[in-house]
Structure formats: structure tokens, C-alpha cells
Image 1 (cartoon, helix red, strand yellow):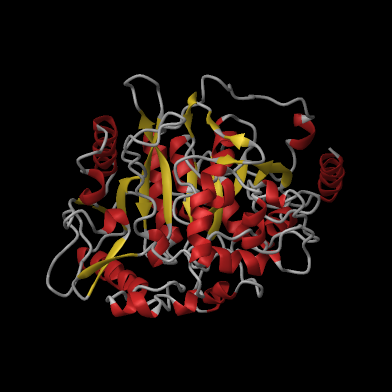
Image 2 (image 1 turned 30 degrees about the vertical axis):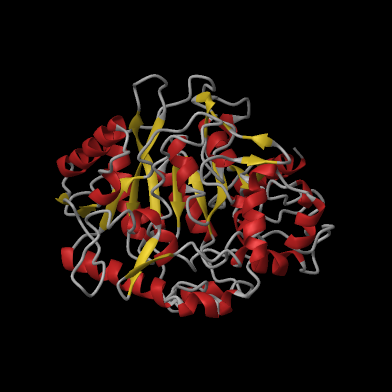
Length: 498
């Protein structure tokens, strides 16, 4: 409230001087509980980090504050950002879906997506390692962007895997996501990966891509390997096919059954390849399939570097110490144990034993790991050959699970391409299921690395043509506040649409 009163004072001064408001002025925003935020612990959902209070804000938190945003507080998350299926932690428990409290939000940025859907905030800052922004956004009927690796900073964030971690926006509309993303982009000397921004020409104004006719002339590649699977829910598939038809009706050229070249023997990713392939995070190397998620050592290695920083106050400065003390939720015990069991550094993976068995995919960044470098090359080359601007598939091939259900298919498609290649991806509301509970679904769009502009253009045009986002019946919208609206009406407006 003190900050809000300060904003009121700033507003009066700006009005008196007839100045333009900062781009995020007074936008109420929530921050995921793994971002360093002055005055608030960054727990990453774990009781072992309840005293993890930093002396400075994470880079992107400070950037949005500098642009006028009003930080309401933190939002709950899946512990250590480890679970894609739900957001459960030992500090605040489980996040429930605002459309039906018996269903999950997915993980790990579930609290932010749920808060937006429940009208508790306008914007949210999340992180995405494999699924953690896009998955919850789709399950909660909002918009979530995983930016290209290197475009937004990760410094001051409790890491999961820095070789795939990124920070990104969640919002209720594509326009609001674009405006928040604009504020997040920037070079950070504390995050070496953002040095890629010095080599790439990144746009400063992403609002310019918010074109209602943005689908006209666009070419959309439909990745049927992810949409048409034996376990895909029929309603989700029907909604996805309708989304493809809607894009075509609004001017897009559909390249159906788009595939990514699989290997030098002429195979393509059009089938399941004996149960392996893109849909399961595998990559073909020298005729054999390797799991690109196989290396777990990045988590303890990166966490220990974060926890030992001098600006922290937490009791545990290593993952091993936290694990030994049992300061975590039982649901992540096996993940922690498996990660700590790998006794080597990311640079040493694969270790000699696995290398002798033929393993080649490593544990490094996407521009140094040979498999990820090749994956990215083949993705871009395949998109170029098919002349497609974006690739489309359902964010989830199945509706949100019931809380406690760990058996039925989840249909999580987010970890398949973007985390490994560094490509940007966005999820946009695709409509609601009708069988039983009315639950949201998401359309997943993926573009070439550093081409967020095209992603926003296509996503915005689809959103505006379909307008699928609908409010939660449990949490109605607050249509009008009690502030002095007339006094603010003459100021240069901050055009949020959520």
C-alpha cells in the first residue's frame, strides 16, 4: 500500500507536467517464488529456502519495477520447478485450477496462471525450463510465452537447469504479454547467455506486431506427430483442428503434417519411431535415440552456485545439505536423489561409461551441446524448406488432470522442441472442453530462435479472431475499482487489455 500511495503521488506529478506514464505504470504484477525480490523470500516452493532473502532484486524484477509495475507479491509454484503436471510445494501446498478446484494447474508457474485466471493480478513473471510457463497458462486459459534462450535474464532466480531455464511473461491477453515481454528483454552482465543479444537484432517494440490481420499471408506448419497421438483426448483434437481451420479462415496457409528432418538416413519425425522421437524428448544421433533430458546434474550444480552467492541469507548453501536435512516436499524426493547421484559436472556429461555405450548428447547450453545444436539446425532448416513462419500443436493433448491423478495421459507437448533448440513458443487459449467440467485448452505456436515478433503477430491475430478466453465461474472479474478514475483519464494511458 505504501508503494501504491507513492504511485498516486507520481501520477499527480506526471499529470502536472503532462508527461507520458512509464510503460507498466501501476500494472499489478505477481512474481514467481523463485525470483529474488527485496523484502520477500525466494523459496522456490521449498521450506528449506524460507530464509532465502536477497539484498537485491532479480534483474527482470528490477526492470519491471523501473518501468512502473506494482509488485503485489509472490505466487506459489511447483517445488524447485521440477514437476510439469502440478504446482505443489512444501511451503504453500498445491495450486488449484480456478475453473474447477478439483483439477490441477500444471507446473511449475501454476500460481501465476491461476492468479491471472482468478482475476487476482494483471500480469505475472514466470520461469520455463521445459513447460513451466506454457503448461500452466494453457490449463488456466491465459497466455504464456517462453522466450528464446538468451533474450531474458535468469540472474537472481533459483535455477532448475540453466541450460534450459528462461524467464518470461504470463498475461490474460497476447497484447499484455507483449508489453510485459518488452520490459523484460535486455542484456545482463550477470547472465552470460544474454550476450547473444549483442549478436542478434532484437526489436524494442513488440506491440508493433499486434496486428489483427497478422494471419494473412502467414504459413503455419501443423505438427501432427504431437496432435494426432493414440492418447490425445478427442475433444482437444477437435478444438485443435478447429484452431487450424480458424487460422486458415483468417488468411493463413496451412502446411499440414509438417515434419522436422530426423536424421541423415532420410527418416522424418512423422511417426513414433518405436516409441521414441520428438514427442518424448529424444534426439537421433548416429542412428540411435538419446534422451535429451537425461542429464540431471545441472540442477545441483546450478543451484549450489546460486545458493552460495554472497547476497543471500539462506541456511542451506548446497542442494546436498538441504536434501540431507529433509527440507523439501516428499513429491520431489526422487528427483533430488537422482540429481545428487550424478557425480560429475555438466561439462563432464556424458561420463566415460555412457560415452562408451554411444551416448553423445551432453548437458551444456544449446549452442555448445552437439545434439541441441543439430536439433536447432534441423528445426530451422525444415521450417525454411517448408517456408513456414510458425509451427502449431496443442500445448497439452489432454485436459487438466484431477488433483492426485498421476496415471491418466497428461499429453504435455511443451518440453519437446523449444527447451532443446532455444526457440520461442507461446500458448494462447484454444477453447474449453465440454465433456464434464468446462476446462481450458491451449494452442501452442513455435517460431525460429529470436523471432518473437512473428510469434506475437500470429498469436495475436488468432486470439482476436477467436476470443476464446473466458472468465472463471468461481472468480468473477472486478470490472471497476474504487480509485479516482476521472482524475487519471487525462493522463497518457497505459493500454493494458487484460
